[in-house]
Length: 542
Image 1 (cartoon, one colour):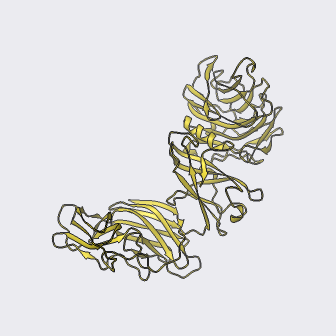
Image 2 (cartoon, rainbow, N blue to C red):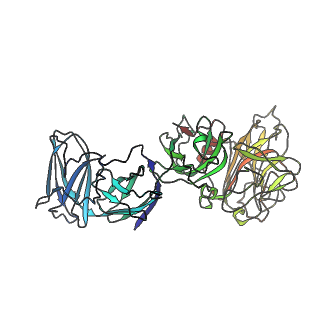
């Protein structure tokens, strides 16, 4: 079995060095009074005699003066498999015991430098292997490239094709380091190497000059979301206060995002205006922990040779439940998913200032967007709809279709999402506005709110014959109107934004309209609102 991962590794601000830290046992030493003892056995409990042991500081790196696979000098276990290492100074260490045949064992330990530590019985296991490529290798340089492992006596040359392989490792979790006189060292953390298995770690040698951590705060001081959210598209807004646009290419093509250990994250640049010092980028984060402010990912930029990697379909994938996503960022009104449900402008529908970059403006007379009737939009049973809505008039008792997949409002097939800012008399009703899912025939599920001017995040979750309505990230008071909600039936009517083709035209603007084939959670929509709102509360540049 081969575990495969590609890493964009962190840039280490250090020069190429010939030697790192002195070894403790198995080479030149830094003297102390500490002692470590242990008994080494194989998987059957038999003593392992003649195995080579090396004790190295955890931050030790092998000397780049010559490549080594670690099989050189060391301290050997005796005929009974016993080992004793002395003259140990205080510190944190990695103890590798290797028979240099088929098996090895690794132990991490801390020592005061003054006492004797008996580690008891250590059992060897089959070798682990780490292999991969370094890309790009060294550009035009002929300088050698090596792979090191912190805490172990390893210095493995990278071949002419950029490949490397370390086959005699004890099972463990490592930080590997790629070094060469031709570029700054590159590190990849948390590389797990199981016994008897192969882990593939491909390292992208960075040419990015700059990086910054972007923290995700879901605690009470941030977004206030207590549950974990999986595969969430995080909106990263950049401006002159948070980003130096002069350090990046003019269209942002050199930006990259990665997890803390270097694993790349999918992203889409929705808008990049280097002259105006503003940008909007969507980044898929695989796990956002609830009630947490320590999680982060890393942004890289400043590489004049980088090509564009922005890919909207990777961020808003059908595999993650997205059936259609319309940023409405330009006059093409494209669908960000691979489904290609682009909107065709009817009437005078036009691009205008949106909540996130640009949005779409509708005149309330005959404007709407026709997104077609692809099968990806013929949803039944479970679905989610969300949009940012800004109405021109919040006092008019009038139904506005945010989204409609029903030609007539009482069609048996399809679904629709509409709002009425003045459904009831605001003088007598504290929640005069309605936000309504229209399902099977005339079955309605309405949330009651008070609509005010400006942008609002409107969402609905449908799961079989139940629905939940959310306004600005909060579930609102609801009721089934006229009759109980029936499960939604798929239909072949086109999906329209801003109207239903013959009436209920929206007068105002829409932005970031999404339809999903899954019932998102309440926590999802709370996080979406807190992340996308003005003065957002999820991400922090620290």
